[in-house]
Length: 141
Ligand code: 5GP
Ligand code: ZN
Image (cartoon, rainbow, N blue to C red):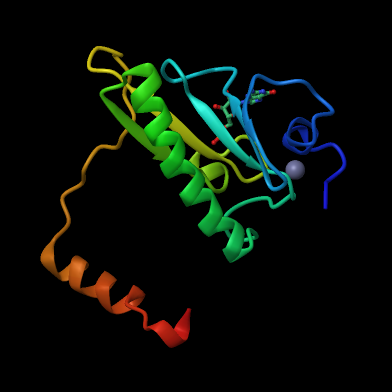
């Protein structure tokens, strides 16, 4: 299902033109308009899901397979030195478009781009408490 007024639904469905790198019945892959680096692409499922929580598991699996194939294309055709996969969920995590998308970002030794975080010191007891809080088993998920 598409969502009214969702820009990525419109792009994925071809209603709004985009620089499309790949398309099949489930996905459209486009160039990002504000790239972090040369060749920055977005995998858009054609079915609307706001984020990873809403995304069907089968689609989630297919996204990773597609990303892996794209990684090889980027390496072979752009000669990139590395690659980031980034997927933001929720405003707090930097999501600005409320339609699930996976960033595929080729990286170059001298791209002067920073994608990352500032590591924090975590006391051992906090690590232990966290482990207790979020350890899970196969039957729970
Ligand atoms: P987010 O911050 O939600 O993870 O990423 C949204 C991404 O979509 C940004 O990198 C932004 O540059 C890109 N973007 C936003 N609007 C458009 C658009 O209309 N066309 C394309 N190709 N990319 C877009
Ligand atoms: Zn949408």
